[in-house]
Image (tube, rainbow, N blue to C red):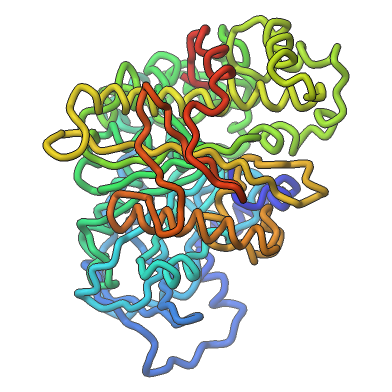
Length: 557
């Protein structure tokens, strides 16, 4: 569960027939709206921008100029599982008033289509020469769900607060973005396991070539993303095709230490093809099957087992070590050299799994002690004695309940572990290359969100996704996990100001904040976002040391 409105999304289900009916008609959100809404009367003040592919018309809202559903790539349907292509130029002025279609996926209530390569821009003024920092948000939902059009990702307040240009986007997901046929269907599909990553590269090329016309500085592009969005950013940091397209990176509860190996990815592709009724000799035929057929097979049981917690649920989709797009793991065996000079923020929330697990299993909030070990074995995703884990947590935190121990241990072993490994890898790299003046490495800043949501009596504390409304300064969005009280607005001011400062200068220190210093192996400096915010050294160090005893293997790889 990776999107910003987990309470709504957890209950959101769409039948395949309704999704595919819209997709078959080729409708994006903008096109669907055009069938049901009266024509808008254009005002002379409506902004029109000339892009490399054609002119687009936006609108004005709350002091910001907004352009939604700008095409950055051609329809992927005719080239399914293949690298994206730029769009064909157009001569007319195209309306950019409504979000484009999302990639086909399950349990989602937006219009969907394989014609999904669209992005959205919020800017104080769409005029060349603005030289504003550009903040490109990559959505979560692992590599299987989501889009750039959630209300929590609306860039109006962020653009206005920071005098920045905000971009969100859609790209290919699940099998459409990551079905690896390179070893099964020939050279035409050699890059199919990373088609979704190549979509992101194409979007960033669009930003490079066009964002100046919207008032942005193509030399100050910051990527930020939560959960799966953060994992995609970590992957881009080791993707040669992305080199030079962004200049700062911030990951929020999302890491990608290793990618799927080609053999595991091939095994998953074989399982998927079998679910489609295709033999390996007919693998290329998957490119011509109806979209709904592919969607119906997405939740086929994953064939990869062997590590605690692996092979759970449906097929894993994610980046692939294909020696084409990706020739090394994103953060293994070290931090990628190509992005050593990019300043980075690596952040997590204190209680990730209270929502990741507890959001779908209410019984985890009322556990008895004898239930905890078995549940830990299922959810920690690391091969460690769960009885040892329970004993250590009870020693460290004698006031914790069984549920507290469960959520804390699963957060530390499953969700936080990879963030620590990435921060360590960057710190080692900085030591080797030199940091700061005269050095070749850029700093890494770590944060931990401790402030707890008051929603539902505070049961969620600081869970997965809570930092989204705070960074976007969107606490007022209905159903926001943060709620919209005075404390939430204060936390939003602090987090959004830090991210804006980072976009502007590569340094997240903003006025009135505790001094945020880079992460080092000796200090493990971490800014704790709370009402009493502070810089701590090695927060939760005992938990970190406990799980460092065991090898880490990222789920799906």
